[in-house]
Image 1 (spheres, one colour):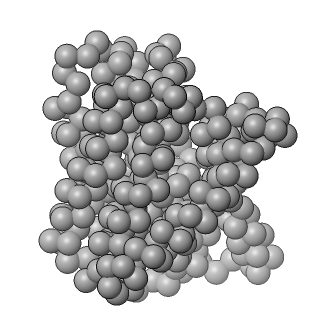
Image 2 (cartoon, helix red, strand yellow; image 1 turned 60 degrees about the horizontal axis):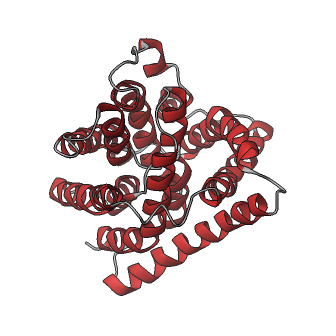
Length: 312
């Protein structure tokens, strides 16, 4: 996977471009009222609760058990955990003078990337099945932090932590199911395997189309109006991924894992930021603006950072 910086940049930029072109289908569908954001929100439930878990489980089923993959699985979980800890540390140093509710949105946005709906499809495009394998570890850890630190921040420190949600969520459960299937090298009947493969193939395009409907509802005037949002973009898209890429390179991991985890760390703000804000009676306009701006800037920042990650 190694190559020159500009060769890698071209490859990654092409894959990012493909994904955002698919997102433009959702954007156009929303603008023409064929498939609007309300429909997209319903489809998120299908993606998050069924299609994404099947994608993750299918990847674990297809992955060959080797000493490198077994070690890589544990290593990826550990580094995904570390990435979120670093992101929380960076977030905690920012926006200290903002009111509690607004600060919670900023902190959530800085900490949580669009790991499932953008990073995982991009990791699959750039790295292949191993990209999904390692990115799935990031998604599982994401969910653990999102259901604890995330809702605590977005709710203005009011939300009660439901311990069951730490494990009993689709992202975490799919990895918990997938790991023994991978370790035992279970080979399901061809009819099941084929069905799972076809459902998994829906994940990337459906996720990006839904992403496009959310993007269509951003106020393009407002997403570039607030200086605070620029700071969030810098921390989420540049500082945190650069810090973690440096750590990944020091750890001496293989190129596939390094690239997949870097993609997850470098993705724009999670699209569920606004959903959580609405659920916990916080402002929904601000997270939409943050998601919009970071998504625009990530078209430039992600190819550059991932191209660096691809280099030995």
